[in-house]
Image 1 (cartoon, rainbow over the protein chains, first blue to last red):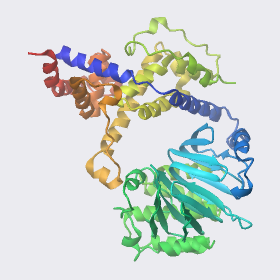
Image 2 (image 1 turned 135 degrees about the vertical axis):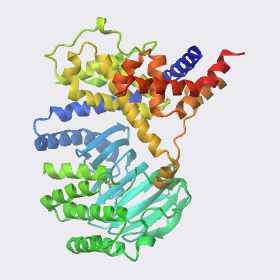
Image 3 (image 1 turned 90 degrees about the vertical axis):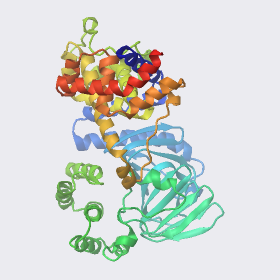
Length: 336
Length: 204
């Protein structure tokens, strides 16, 4: 019988071996190795990081400038450079398509930064960036003039005047969660829906699927777990984690979002801290702790305090939902 | 400057007929220690890429993306140890060991994440592998593939190491960090799971 077992295993193994990786996959592996080589080759971290980001940015900007060149007038603020920030990002560019893996932070223009955490695909079109697949958080600086910046999605486009929001798109379905500011979703029949901080809108390829509603509490995307299953559903369903409904009485999410949207970060921080002292479940405490660190680091620029906060966060939630993101933030923060 | 690893891709040939984990030491030319680490990695990538990809595809049930991730992890890890690996008499053993252990760790994590309760909590769909995607159209082989995929990761890895790669149980125990007795038990468990199909294969 052992002989038959061996033969079965060998035949299965032979069949599996016939698969092999695609040339694109090989190229991605090679690119990742090359990135690691460059990372190790740079002389010192801060200077090397800037040099690599600059060199990559110049190379990519050359390609993108050609794509954008003709129709910058109707594209709002034209992207000027694509700069890869350090973290743990690998990218593959094919034509106007960018496939990103890992934690990437990309400057699409002087006014727009996009951040992705796992696999994501974007297209850089003359009308604006398009989210093809995956989750991406956009940060848009306030736009001067009348023409907004547009982010294209399957069900229409998102017009932005200066804000932070997360787009998740998969299989021509998607959603946007607005963190700060104000955005207008324009569907394919030119129907316009205004979103306020803390609101979510979902779409399909046919247009708007569900009008604005309050999203779950965490303001950063949770691509690792929620996205695929959630987008398989025709409309958003309450998650078993924290939801706006289940915690509205105890967690003043809207208040925090409004304060952030208004640029009143000290007050937002104070509300987050006060709320964190109340009795909450572990997941909500983690989300609030993440929020606190993000405000300290991104808005108040209190780097030392943020570093201490992230270290404490990792000790409190070593295997939490945000552990990977916190570790990266801590690394960024310590390198400053 | 380091060697551009992308250029080496063109030189990658077809995989060897079978994974031979530790047996080709006599033919090995050690790389010059004067080479930059990146060059060593690039050359080792050319040399051992097929072994790593094959093992990753085997344990990942033919999933390309899975195998790609493992391959990246192995060669990124190699950067840390490249001089040590180059000094080894048989680097192939290092690649075999590291790839197998990375695959095993990932399979364990996946198995945990595929538990119904965890899937429900994380809202993830079950990662189903279709045997026909890897060309297993024959019914017996298809069922064997499914049975193998359903085995606990450790059992699956031990079965392939023992029956396909021909490693003695002592060596498997050393690579996986278990006792020989435990490996023997795992192999026996795997054989029992495939016994019915083996009997069917042998015929009446």
